[in-house]
Image 1 (cartoon, chains in turn brown, purple):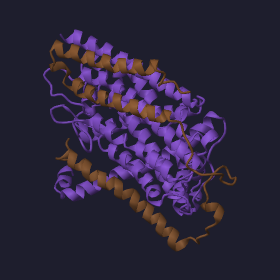
Image 2: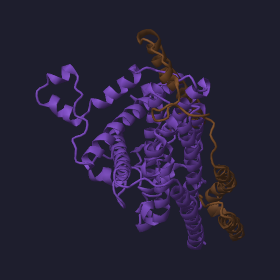
Image 3: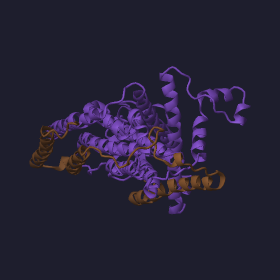
Image 4: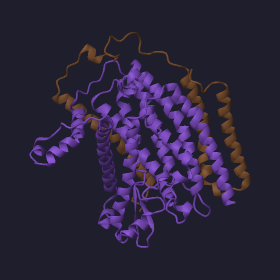
Length: 125
Length: 382
């Protein structure tokens, strides 16, 4: 049963609902805080949490550049995976040549993985 | 009844449906949190939450103490606690993004629920008609596309907190989520190779996947977990990683990162993250059930239509609808129990192990699996 004549329109409407609902909840919590709770701000409450001891140094710490490598690799593979989904949907209508072409495409994907693996980009050091 | 409903104005129906989704997701998330505590207590041999008891329930003789021991009121108390706690905003955070992050976490969780079909009924001709709120024909693609937006909430929360632990947690979580998304997406491609049979319009709809697990014949009636066990395994493992569940909960490994990306959060803003996590688990289990566990079919090789005929209820759409929803939810709840079981059984991975499993084990396995099934299905069909 199609409960909605325009499923995508419903999805769009629901996106708005999904944004509005947490906003309403947070506003209610905030209003409760405003009117019924005594505000007790303190220096310790407002400081960054570091296991209860005094926060040391800047909070902008260094982190491994390796995360970026994973992000770039992800970007390449994700675009390639995206092309596989229409292939899967149109699969049965495709001639053998297209299937071979797609296999070559998947092997290119695998080759990219092998390359990154051999370069040691996949090793978390 | 149905006619009355469909004669209502469109905006009103949308409002009702939106409200219904929220009313389903929030209590289920609450019950999941209670179940999590009870299951963990059961596995560790302790009684678990058994204290909370509203006054008027305490007067009921036998039922009151029973419900108290069941801990059924704890999730209401938890919800109330979240609302009444001090909604503090630490001074060092980036306020706009700090408040935006939990909203971004809830948004994909609530939106994707609508694209998951949750049951079916039989029409007068005996056809199985799936029930769903938004029956988009790109079903699974919509689920993936919207739910992967959830990664932004982790990055925003980690970055806006302007503190060390949340920042590291956010970075780790985002790298983990994107890594497992690849294996997850690749693992479902064989399913859609299988179900896009000749002469039918190409689709990525989840309802179609269930339809293909309720066909007559040995391969027709088999659930996809039997036909594609490797794909199901990859999908399940990736699901654990995508929902930040236990062996993969790098984002909030309390031993090294305290609470991870939501260390600085409290009260309702934290509660939204919490609900979103359980909602993601719910949706993930739902998608796994639809793709690999036969959706609303009670048993492998036994379809909903046959089951309804066996119970002599095939002529009653309402009964069949409720039955199918019950079967579907039963499988989803069993899967959620499995999530909890794993959480209290398997030790947490190290971060290098997580990345190694994602990139060096699951991704090559998913590619090999895809190639094998593409060639195999092509050989069978041509």
